[in-house]
Length: 186
Image (tube, rainbow, N blue to C red; front, side, top):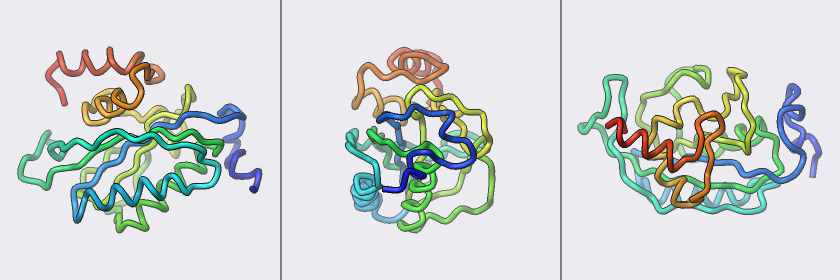
């Protein structure tokens, strides 16, 4: 295997551990056969080089989020979380996630930085939520995901897969989720 996959690009090697790391991936789909697409995407994740294990939550359904808030008129999302044990650098893993999205018909309406939310409906969305305890403010690779602590549909499934999960910078996922639900935000 090419060492470049584990080292990453543009100094990525300096920002992540050398051994296996648990990476948290949020999966979502609200167009087409959501269940089949997500099942195929999970198989694709397991075939990514330097991925040693994949644990996946049960899928949940959630209302589509738009800039104005929840949109019950839009097709509902099917969401899940996968935890990968990987030796890939985070930038390389993100590139694989984008390739899997494209393979499943994902069309991005506009180029944007990782910090800008996208609101379009999609056949598949794969977000890198966390990569071990790595924190990055690089606009190409924001870690942890800047809106993860605001998303019940990410935190709930993540907690189901890893009851001891910690979101870097926010704390234990069970506590973050409790605060989110008490605040009435989804």
